[in-house]
Length: 216
Image (cartoon, rainbow, N blue to C red):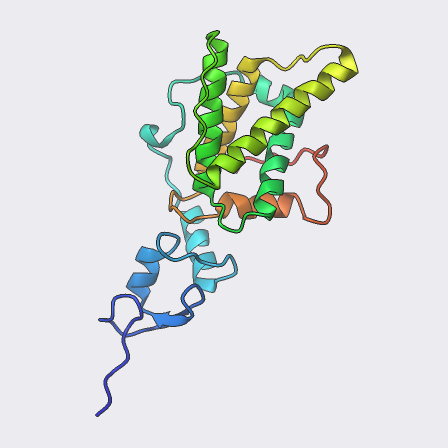
């Protein structure tokens, strides 16, 4: 009698669904446990889409410990005043992600938090920079830093000086970090926010001038 086939991950339970990330059949418990953790799930996986839909419908408010930069407060008016700058940040993320297959929401969040810490030190009058040590988060950090430098330079060329303050950059980065944390599910290989950006900035029509910063 032939041996019964088992899950390609646990090798115990009966395989019930084809996993496009592994190219083999796995069981439902392993799918739920390893999805976006050890499995690099493609965005069109039907089980991933269903899981994200369920998470969206049953989303709970994040714990205070999960909110980036707890205790940092700023006016909502600042976000509207600097909407163009925020749109440019999002555009830069989308541009960088287009050429980085391994980039995840966590990589982007790591880069933004590190860059925000850099600008927090600038506000205090001390320049201290600690970029992420690992790729592709380090590359994302550099790309965002370059965008901010170019943005301020172009602003200076237009009006003679840059009106964008270091404190405003810090608060914008904090806002963006919180937005990403709210969009994603915290799994290390999740790309929920990045998928959202792909819809906002189609690759054939990448225009940073258009504001597409949309909070859920």
